[in-house]
Length: 173
Figure (spheres, rainbow, N blue to C red):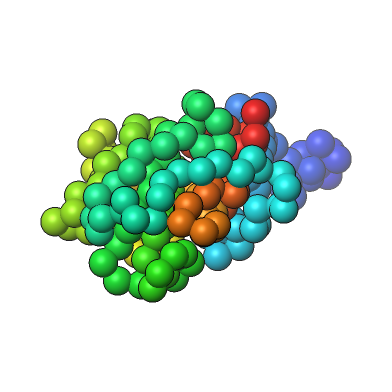
């Protein structure tokens, strides 16, 4: 008759320490995967500063306006699109803004008006500003964080951030 140790080995194979650590690490990483962009929390009122970004009269279609938000270490870009876009503000809902830090490795994206895309020069991730900064192609893990805007008189103001700015655990430092 076999000993209890032999029976246990046949019923449940032993996992080596190395395999145990691999399985545990993979499980931990998988539990922290990003949530789909549709589930992004809306910015909390009064959690972000209000910042004047541009005057309506000075904005031209497809001419980006650089600014920083919510602090000086967070480069962003405001765009006036030629057609209305979801989430746009201003006349005809054509004005949007995004963090310019690519969600892949944090390289600054730039707007290419001939393609109507925000493109990262490091690994060519491309984001569509007309579709809430959604990634079109590339290695980006999420859409670009969108800067929430409002119009006060003739002034476009930044009032919040939807999504997490690359390299941060919180947008407000």
